[in-house]
Amino acid sequence: MIIILFILVCVGLSNGANQKIPLQGRKGQWHLLLNNTGVVGMHMALTYENTVIMFDQTEAGQSSYKLRKRFNGTMCTRNQHDLTDSTCFAHSVEYDISSNRIRPLRLDTDPWCSSGSFLSNGTLLQTGGYHQGAKRVRYYRPCGGNHHQCDWIQSKKYLSNERWYASSQILPEHDRVVLVGGKRVFTYEFVPKISPNEKSFNLPFLHQTYDRNSDGNNLYPFIHLSSDGNLFIFANRDSILLNLRRNRVIKTFPRIPGNGSRNYPSSGSSVLLPLDHKDNFKKVEVMVCGGSATGALNAARRKRFIEGLRSCGRMVITGNKHIWEMDYMPKPRFLHDMIILPTGNILIINGAKHGCAGYDNARNASLEPYLYSPKKRLGKRFSVLEKTMIARVYHSSATLLPDGRVLVAGSNPHETYTFHNVAYPTELRLQAFVPHYMEKRYHTWRPSNLTIEKHAIGYGKEFNVSFLLGKKPSDDVRFNVYSPPFTTHAFAMNQRMLILRCKRMVRSSKGWVHAVLEAPPSSVVAPSGYYLLTVVNGGIPSLSKWIRFAHA
Ligand SMILES: *[C@@H]1O[C@H](CO)[C@@H](O)[C@H](O)[C@H]1NC(C)=O
Ligand SMILES: *[C@@H]1O[C@H](CO)[C@@H](O)[C@H](O)[C@H]1NC(C)=O
Ligand SMILES: *[C@@H]1O[C@H](CO)[C@@H](O)[C@H](O)[C@H]1NC(C)=O
Ligand SMILES: *[C@@H]1O[C@H](CO)[C@@H](O)[C@H](O)[C@H]1NC(C)=O
Ligand SMILES: *[C@@H]1O[C@H](CO)[C@@H](O)[C@H](O)[C@H]1NC(C)=O
Ligand SMILES: *[C@@H]1O[C@H](CO)[C@@H](O)[C@H](O)[C@H]1NC(C)=O
Ligand SMILES: *[C@@H]1O[C@H](CO)[C@@H](O)[C@H](O)[C@H]1NC(C)=O
Image 1 (cartoon, rainbow, N blue to C red):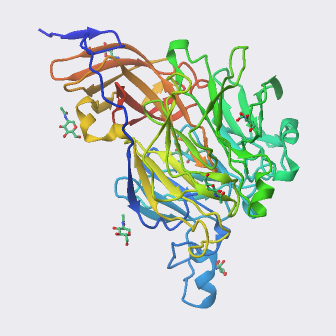
Image 2 (image 1 turned 90 degrees about the horizontal axis):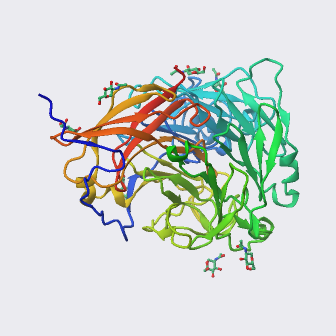
């Protein structure tokens, strides 16, 4: 006879006994992982093989990863030419999380200030860059940290326009991306093209928001795919909703308050707040935080560093009432990353307080991350976390790892690798910020041994997961999925979290919990591809496991 001990609704497992988890006042820790990544982690992306791709620019000259042989096979000798020849150095590496090691990757053209998105099969589609690289498309197909057989592959097909400082978003259909903007490029285009004569589309909004006295202030536009299939585009201080199928702007949102700009080189950041099954993923809310003050770029060129913006705006982009709800960070900030943690809170990390983006344009690095809790009352949402000793200013980045840590790399506000006599030297140390929820004291609450019965799940389909919840189930067990972003220049492209519906949950005698979850309803809500699934028990996340949503 099978005895099922508890059959519970999905809101709780504690059976009335209220297990309050003491989370207040915990600030997390910093761990130094490597002293030398070889290459500045200007761009980063986590692959489903649990490696992180990092790259900077091929035209930086010497990196700190010297090659014995060029990728074209010729030896790198000790003669004067080779000691400084850029092709004798790696400009991209793959970091293997479990072994904590890097290996060099080959780049043929310059991907500096480019963009990227993961396709549905987990291959990274990386687009644009500088000079010969500006119209190039590159693929990285992950094959695991130890295999050493995968590398960048440059496509023979070109982009329609140069995409230097453009943004990329994966789309619900045709397994392709949209690229928006670029330096003095006021268009968008799709990659790959469906037909050979498909060109780019004009987007006057990018022209209108271009601030010619300040290098644009609208580069790397913040783009987010709304759950109605339209594309939200934020540039400088303004935002629109674009229907990509009809090439039509269908909404113009109110201007965000604040005394400056939000996009490069003002370099604030933006995040799509977690989407929730409770409203069928219908409510979509974006947040934009920080940036630089008006005039910051010209002042920085004269070595005057103006205080950045403290303000953050939150706006629901669906429905028909659009108001920026304003809030204030503890200190001004720009050049920061905003990473959604497995708990659904937002980590604001890296950056600086005075100046703006660009070479040597920032001062007063922001050493303390902030935690932003979107569900708390206005005025109570920010808390200040543990300070790092390492400044991460221009050309730094951060990315969430499957174990709940946040990888932090880069910073190089110089044209070449420069280690002496500058305010902020080139930074090659790799750190992890370890949030409080990973502390040992929470292990009794932590769901463990998460297993997913099937790894490719069709939209709207039920699927089963099981995990161990030993002693301390709380009233609040959640299941969320997270798409790994491509992070650069303070913007995490394609970052998306969905809180999934749990239909049933059963707890057996040995502490195993079996839950029936429902996959997102469509690729509009969650574009096809790999996501990290996490079980969160009263604010304490499990290790995350990869899951793939696909068209059945
Ligand atoms: C980094 O270098 C410092 C100083 O040389 C050394 O003490 C430390 O162990 C190194 N850390 C790592 C992770 O290699
Ligand atoms: C390899 O690259 C170097 C540096 O760009 C170049 O000088 C050399 O001619 C190349 N050799 C071959 C065989 O392509
Ligand atoms: C994924 O798709 C891309 C584009 O079609 C292809 O180049 C790549 O090899 C595929 N990757 C895998 C892992 O199948
Ligand atoms: C803009 O600056 C004014 C004057 O310093 C200040 O009162 C106002 O709060 C600022 N606006 C925002 C949104 O920070
Ligand atoms: C750094 O911050 C302090 C405190 O706000 C300020 O007084 C100082 O002017 C700032 N430094 C620069 C170079 O802007
Ligand atoms: C849970 O996972 C741990 C570590 O992977 C393993 O040692 C242990 O046997 C697993 N427990 C059960 C009950 O399967
Ligand atoms: C999930 O588990 C339930 C029992 O809890 C079972 O009836 C159902 O068939 C399973 N569903 C799938 C898709 O495996």
